[in-house]
Length: 102
Figure 1: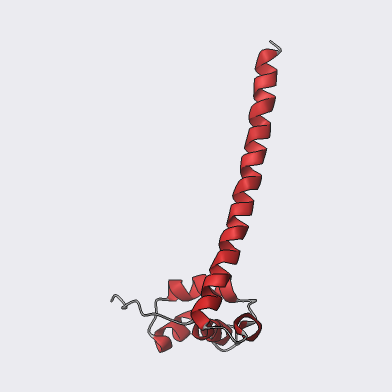
Figure 2: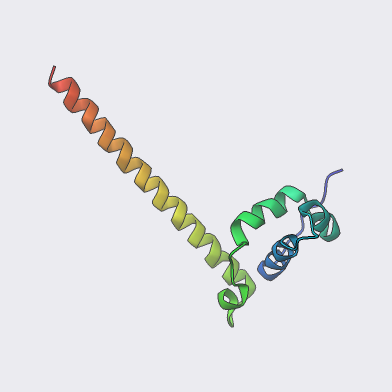
């Protein structure tokens, strides 16, 4: 059975994630209750588990807060990739120096 992908606001996502954190709840049950795929809810758990939605939203439109959170996540990924590139460049330089010394 394929579930239709519906648009879910940031406060709704965080509420569902918090619901899965209850000792008596399971991700599958919460996902079924809200009509979403369990893997979507697992992904949201990784993304939004520590989000203080009230602080994030403030007086903003929830869509703006959601976009702001996505930007933060992308910046973190970009930082990780920049670090990996720097390590690879350093290693490549070491290999070139090693080849030149032969």
